[in-house]
Image (spheres, rainbow, N blue to C red):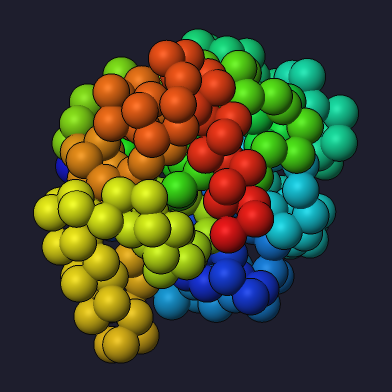
Length: 253
């Protein structure tokens, strides 16, 4: 089977939505639709309807257009079974569950931290991750409902995915994240090169997403809380405490 196309499109101020569509098919999957006009535009541009909607978490900037899209296209909504704040799913999924849409298999990864019910979707065979607000390019989501232990455990799960995984996250926060990362890791050559690339993308008005897990493992400080470097920097031998201190520093940066 051919690899599906993933079309990124902007929503609201700095959100990203995604359309997943197999070549030569007329039905697609929307990820976290929040802006109805932009969702309809991407569907029209690619001559398809939204047969399914998959939701990572319940924040309004990720679900704002779900009901309208479902009404127009009779879309099947998929979401985490324990998240009562999302529009009622037609299919409720659990951690580690594998389901299929249009011949593509998706694995559910429960990633509490940003919200307690947050999930990621990993496309098996294609190594594509939709990370919502768990993992960002050079950052991670704010800790609204979780605690440092559960959030670090969630990021640790994602670190185990194949390094060639393409990561499609929920926001364009890369440049702001880079400024913080360089403040605590200024001598990281990979990070400095990433900054040059991202700056060029910004100058050309191009997205910095998708990123790859391999780049994030080298450059994203929030995936490196278990390294000697950051344990020394934050004066602790506990990775969870490193994460807590790093997240607090970023919140106040």
